[in-house]
Image (cartoon, rainbow over all chains, first blue to last red):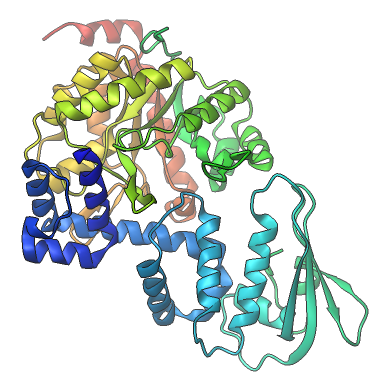
Amino acid sequence: MTALAFQTALARLIVEPEFRDAVRAEGTAALPGPLTPREASRLATIAGDRGLDMNRTLHKGFRLGKLRALLPLTCSLLAPARLAREVAAFWGANPPSSFSFLPEALEFCAFLEQRPLRSVYLAEVLAYERATLELERARLGPAPPQSVRFRHDPVRLLGTLAAGRRPRSVPERPCLLLGSKEGDAPTRWTLVDAVSPPRRYDRESAAAAPGGTKGIPT
Amino acid sequence: MRVPTLALPRLGVGLAYQAPLAPLLAAARAELDYVEVVPDILWTDLGQGEDVRYVDDCAGRRALEQASRGRPVVAHGIGLSIGSAGLFDTAHVDQVERWRRRLGFPWHSDHLAFHLAEHGDGLMNVGITLPMPRDRESIELLVPRIREVQQRVPVPFLLENNVYYFDIPACEMDEPTFLNTLCRESGCGLVLDLHNIYTNARNHGFDARALVAELELEHVGEIHVAGGMELDGFYLDAHSDTIPEPVWSLLEWTLPRCPNLGGVTFELFGSWFESVGDARVSADLRRLRALWTTATRPARRSAVAEPA
């Protein structure tokens, strides 16, 4: 059973910088048991190895890559400094538990929804990407339809972010985006607002939208 | 029933499949003999305890089959974590077997490492392959697991030598002794990742060729080659570039000395393909093809197979 405790401690040295720092400062005294003296000595040595820091860099890159791939618009909207702070807070409270990318992204969405963030657009962008993930997550039955309420024009807002630009002064347009997905077919979004009839909201319609937005993820 | 060790077909040169590399697979018809896939991308694991644990990715399968264009498909897994002390996931192995039946893998492999560790009531996934102590205790953990894999998936099973940015101090064995012992006692083969050895040699200051010379190369079923990059004073196994010359030299020395080799696989992350460029990647594939042809000629092979 000591091998199990050894591996847990080794993984924690990479994932938890506070634990690594404690082992660096206090040596084997900071290590929880049961460990053999050889295992404890190995861990204390590894804690001071700069290769461990490279492993942490790679671990963070792996984990952040998952979030960037699945929540590109949210990550873009948060901007690097804020994203780094939020990700650090999220990781501090949530050890990496899944090899699948999607559950962690959904957990990050839930985490951000509870945070006092000041961006006027974040709630809408987050809800849209969360709904997209819900539609695309692997499941045995059909995906339940999704509805996302927008206060700002979703074509302008999402299109600007998808084009790699920061949204500014997006006009108000209270509306709903209704998402559905059948089998392996691409997700379909339909825009429903208060004053005009429903219409498909996809790459073609986004590209033709005012402002020339394109690349809306569908 | 034990699977005969390394009864591998001699396929030739392969490419590690990534969706952005599909155009390369389409263009390089003459240079590429097989496609290697990370099978874990072909399903979603909903987790232990679910009524149906795995949801297969039918669209992903179609994309792979379209990209491979009839070439054999070899599996190189990332999800087994065979070195995890507290976990051996036979359901994962059975899922590999289900996909072997579909895609007909002539052999399959995973990493000689662990990435899952117990944490509280659950599992922590570090997301990178962590080294195991090269001790007798690790051999005794691994051998029965390898035999279980061999029973559940009736084609040769290979493990890949690990890249490591820190080494575990005071191991009982050096790396060649550990790998030789493991292969001998378990009957598994080796994915000899020459770029991993080159990376470890650069970062830890040893002679890569001397390490390879200590290996019992009859255990090698597949060779991996790749390129990397420097970051913060380390050379990384980043799969981010074409094959560096020192790895070519290692390959030229090693390849004709592996009598049971099934293939040489080039690994490049799809996200780097555009910046590396089709021309440079294609040039490497042509060079690999020429090396394979030369090294596997019967006269040449028998010449180098004689003991020095």
